Image 1 (cartoon, protein in one colour):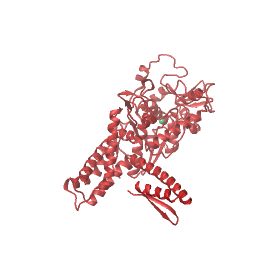
Image 2 (cartoon, helix red, strand yellow):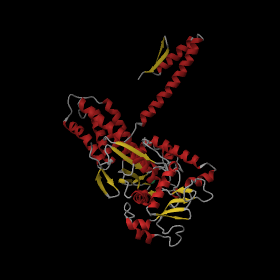
Image 3 (cartoon, protein in one colour):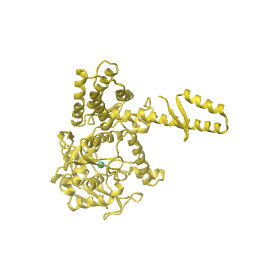
Image 4 (cartoon, protein in one colour):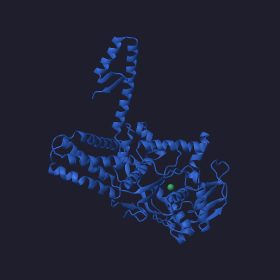
Length: 495
Ligand code: ZN
């Protein structure tokens, strides 16, 4: 098995990956809140943890990958104030909230498929786990870390911080949080500003509500991941991931909920991908740089000079390390498109290379080292840019071989091809979009030829030999071989 090292946000250091119960690995990643079209911000965590999911399986682990769908409880301003985004949209558009959640869940799945992100093993919905979330709240209350106020339940951060420490993941401390809090008054139902909601009593206009011992209401956002992670992965599991923007408050609150309910932390390795900027700015609706994935795929947003295919987006995201920032610009995406095409062309060119009796010295050395170098890059906290640069070096060797400026043995060519395929397709999860396009084109040709042959059959039935022969000759000229057999007409394209 490979010696994988990953960066654990909890300890702010790289650590050797040692699962709790090998070969099984439990992995939980915070999924989308399904109230809007999937955008670039969804692409990065899903691709980052897709790489981890693929790689863990490749190196021999049995991975249970849970990625949730947030369809209730994630509120607009913070976890305690404001409207539920799905509810708000439902009211505005006079839809059932579940219609909205389902619509955007489908849109999210479509985008993930286009990006060749593998589906998780389990995709639980928050609304399907209200009972588990209520049980979690009850446990936290029983241990004295939550209180009821006006039918809502709040987590007592101050009490928790005395017994444990609040802020272990984000490195914040409670005194600073209280001092930095802008709101001097108006804690409302809460004892302290830093307390967060575990259960909220529903206002009369709320559509999404469930009965509970405290009130008809809905769970606080942070509850779902703790409750569903524990349900599907157990009280202790290996990896919890998500975007860096979730470290505080979401993941910090998850840790507090786990410790307050079961007495210790659930997660061994916390992993976070960095954020995406567009032309150097944070993505936001007010900045007019909020670009959905579909707008990228079709080029329909005004800041885009062209359409960028799903594989260009995937390749671009993988060209940076997941803990580094990524800035989207037309120039950077066009460079990624060229890089992606260069790699796909080289892999296609492997078929045209003529082998020699033996490899020349430098080719032999390169092929012998390539696989190890790619593994070393992946094992060092998933350094995909280094994998890509090794693959680019391989592209250079392929070009030399095509131009007869280097020599390769049959055995080395096989090795080179296998390594390039393994890392480009299986591990980085790229697909050759051009071959998908070619397949579509051939399918379209097929339909046209079938239609033309149908016309020819009709001409023959009418004994219109001139038209029948004309069609056969025209097809032959276009490169289609038509044969009349006992069982009917067959055709193939001469290449
Ligand atoms: Zn979460």
